[in-house]
Image 1: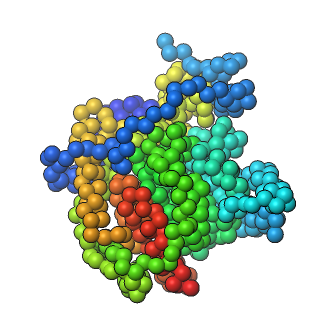
Image 2: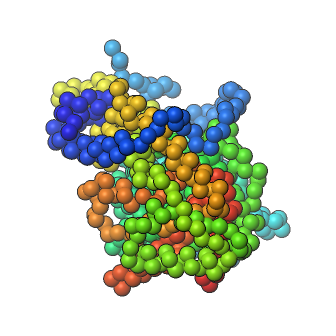
Image 3: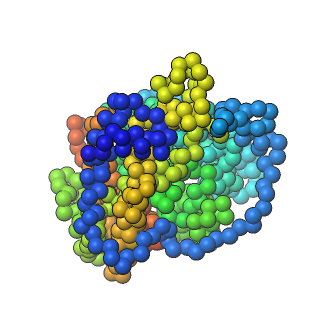
Length: 95
Length: 472
């Protein structure tokens, strides 16, 4: 079973706020699924190359050109920003 | 009937039925009628029109349509208006297809019943006491209830095929790379693929022809050579070899087994040869799927932070993480926004994926899973040396009732057991109706799944089409 400290550590890495009750639930749920993953211990993968991309395509390239969305496009993007100042995305102070 | 009348007929059907079914989250009436008018004008000018022109469909809320709300079934995107069209939408618009609205889904496509949507449940049109499947439950239900002629869904572990099976319609998951994912809100990028729901196999081929093709905005998309998939439907599968994986069918029982065996006999009668094959690493598929998928989910969903777009937790109303009455700092904004904005299943998967990718565990989980994934692909490669297609039921069950599986995540995950290997291997697969189970006086649909070799959509479409027309 994962400890409370471990759950809190993962939650902080994942940037998800958790309550005491959440922590207990995650301890149970995650531990159950991690136990299920133990199944993989039986598989011999010596000499097997991992795959990330399934169809084996090689690099594809496109021109690194600037696409101008225009004023309308800019407005459409900025409309979705929770907090802004003029035409800038406002970020909370980091320091 | 004009395209405008056709669109209006469908909006009337939606108005009449969708209160009960709940397939749609947003209707795009203005857009649909504009598109329909454009097609009608073309017809009036005597211009030739394409097969999909003026034909109304629904789009899973995961896929962006310019100027239309796209929630992906999540509260965190409650107020998000997509600023651009996904590539599939651009192609559909260019080909004159009419978009009726956005369909309900499990939150960020995480679920097998559409019950994790933050907005509403969707009822199975066949039996409203049952789920439509998921995660593309709204898209499947819209077609099954005749609230759309076609729809688009996304399939990461079975999210098109399983709801197609539950609702008694056709659902196609194309080969990874056949269809551009640009503009589909990402869940697990190495597994996600967009595909159609329709009433017939031929219609699925027609929609695929429009949405397929390479797109420089999705570097994993592949050349399709402007293939018209509907031209490959010969209705003849004589001499084809169909493999039935013993690992998939050995635990089948009851009516589903009977219906499946009957369908195998039917394929034989149509001239196909049936062979039993083995996919020996099948038993590991679910475990590696849940490692790879949750890892990619944790990375893809990191962008929902309450800063750039989407919802943000109220600065002063906190959840205990901040001192009451003071504005949140940056970390507190992240923590609270994601705590409030995401539902339980989404958070569970992000947590799991974060754990699997965290320092000290990467080799044991993600890297190991990618290696076993290579073995799963090898299983299929070896099978296709002997057979043309692989055939099994789409699901080990029919549509279940609401609430039946929500309390036990592993039980819900097992619903995807026959569909996930296909995503891990990146193969194309189609679910199509093969019969019904009679339960509580309702005829609940059972789906068959044909799995093709990489980029052999035309092969499985033709085999499913041949089966379908022989039923009539």
